[in-house]
Length: 227
Image (cartoon, rainbow, N blue to C red):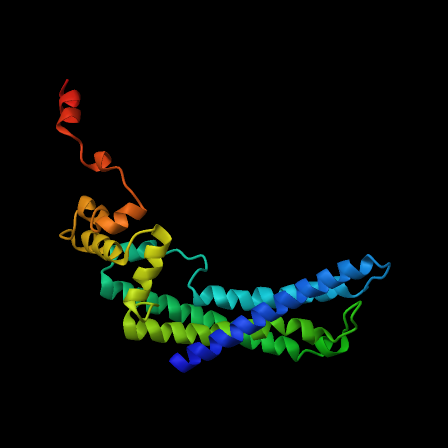
């Protein structure tokens, strides 16, 4: 599955960057030649179709990073094993939906009007534009299979637990040790306290200083409260 992951990642990145980059280049080139009194009449339609392709391919990349909108409130009521099975059920439902959409998308290309109808300006057959739907859905279907395998094997979409910790550390400005300690405190209730997590590493604390008085009220503050 690692080979499938690498292959899909390469295809997704190349197609998404290629279509969006080509749309940008066509628009820029058309702006430049307008300065010389010329213009390409077909650029608007071409850019629209290229953006359609980049949108469907971009949806695959969004799925790869698991950033599509989802409702995961049920996961709060389950432990790790329950969360794994909940993710598997959600992945299977997603797989069925994407498989159905892929089949319908390829069937759409087989319709007579897809081959007999041409676009207004570029005069290309309609199936060329419609190809974005089955292509994007098929790539999403393959990506969903790879993600489902990851959940089954590792119990999570991240094959390397340290990778998830590193990503969270970069997003929060904390160190990996601080994030790991905070996870232990939340999941077990017996891990490091909030104070221990925030001041776990004095060197890292210098990079993101925290007001100790916010968490360590002085006796003077207690006296003022009693008054």
